[in-house]
Length: 284
Image 1 (cartoon, rainbow, N blue to C red):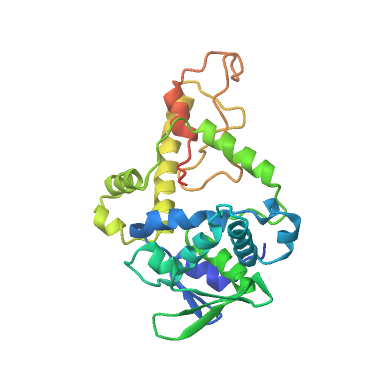
Image 2: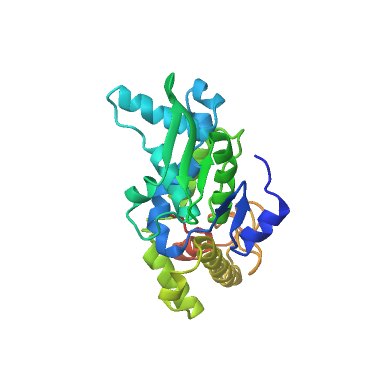
């Protein structure tokens, strides 16, 4: 995956719009979190998991072809192409305040007349009344920017889908029986930052998630420090060794079982502390 130019990285880090190829991409705001959660799978999908023939075409064209062929065969489409359109509509701020179906209809599909399953480009009219086009090749670039603007981690092009899924399943299992939802996240950040929830609704999603991780890291650092003072230890070291900076690895070391601490003594740390120290907030 190609690294974004430095000027784009700086703009994204400060939640500024990014201009590229005649388009302006905006970070999605918290008040559209639910809509973005619907679109998110189209950004996160791993093309390595597709049939071999679809690995050779740009992602947007592959998503279009899969849904067209499924519909033609009388099957239910996966719906990832529609989610990709929604991701674009949110990022371009097309049809703000309207139903998501209306927003997706801002785009017109141009396909090859000789091969209806072959997408040539998307056409739409921007908020300034100018006609624009997005080719499948351009979408590949836009996807990377949109993901970065909204805190979505894209897997490397060479990553193994099975290994990635196994890693995510393990992370979900180690996080406990959580019920993650945006309302609770906003309420928590509101309480910790003394910021009204209505104000947070107008934050970019990336700002909310970065702020939440910062509070989580500080609290985790305090909890781990208290736990170490009570004799706790971790097989892979303290998962939260610093209040400001995250570990360069995943930092999910668990408390060592009885007899595996440095002094051979019992680990005086309840399971709830372990969860607080190691869990990561995740949303669909």
